[in-house]
Amino acid sequence: MERNEFIKSLGLGVAMVCTGACFSACGKKSDSPEPDKPNGGGIPSGTSAKVDLSTQLLTIGASMVVNSILFIRTAAGNTASSFVATQAACPHQGGALSFIQASNYIQCGLHSSRYTTSGSILAQPSDGGTTSALKIYPITIAGNILTATA
Ligand code: FES
Image (cartoon, rainbow, N blue to C red; front, side, top):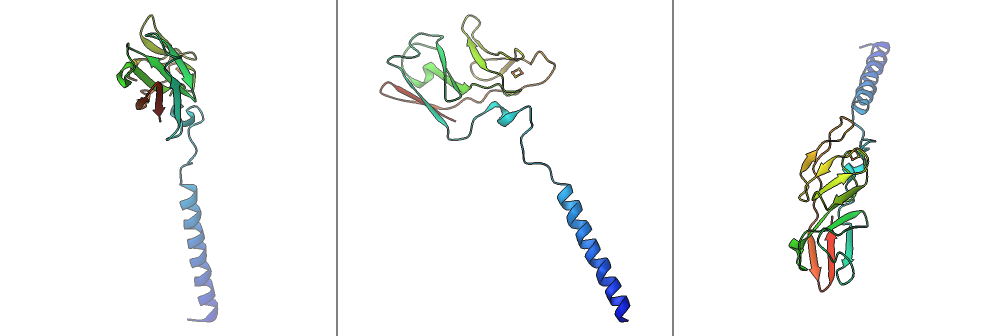
């Protein structure tokens, strides 16, 4: 092989490697979340929130948001099964969720999607979009302190 031919073949090889690397990089999907679903309305894993049951959530149907977790008292007594802890932001586009005691469901203030207290979807968003089920967080109770951890 002549010197000129060798250099030309080397240049062609380098060009093929660079092109392949470019196509590979261009083909990757973005790691960023969908702009309209920041974290699916959820919160970072490991996030926890506490409620003092001696002064808060005293009556059935009472609800409150602490540290982006929506707490709902669903029954009498201070056992874990008397409460629900779920995300306070809607999975659709992050609207604020609240418990509607009279209807016994969770509703989004932005597009009116509705969920059961176990997180299932009762109604899709009014804007024609789709939502997903709510995350339900485990609860522990120690003394009067209720803790939910995402
Ligand atoms: S943000 Fe909740 S239904 Fe759209």
